[in-house]
Image (cartoon, rainbow, N blue to C red; front, top):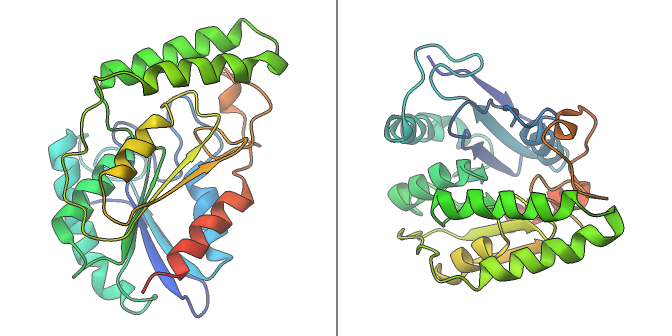
Length: 256
């Protein structure tokens, strides 16, 4: 049995289903190097804008039962969850919008390509990855190494250089999906986990897609004063930027 949490404000204008992160990420967006529940914060911010949401976890993760499963079974579970929840969301603002963050964007994007506009209003992908894992791990390692060696005032120039280098590489893979629903790709300008070229490349491949590159925000849409080590990222008081959540909510609310 999959564990989940429904946040339903009074008189909702829309509904969102969060794609769970692959791996051991829980419904709040916490895993081995995140401790401040970014997805739970986004859900709370959306509720404040009268948008309902459902967050869940994969099998064997968090409060879900069963044993941990691989990517294909996780995708099948998520698509089944969206189809099961469709009836409930008809009462919570109509067809749902899917939302994914980081690796969870893969589930959201593939599910959106399967279900289409007949079942969904749109899809929001925050810091979406489309390149090979080896490329992304290389970027994160190189960016972190460059930034950790510098004072905060100089870190962003170093990050911009690494981002630009990866943006010029030819090894990025195409999205390879036919997304036929409105798409919003969101990424922080100061993302040191995935290069911003990822969201730009994805948005360029989907007709009518909107891309938001948010100044001063990092991979988790937190306003970043400097690079944080994985240990520092476990702090519980990092706030997701409310303006970023507002921009996402406004885009969702404007969908037909």
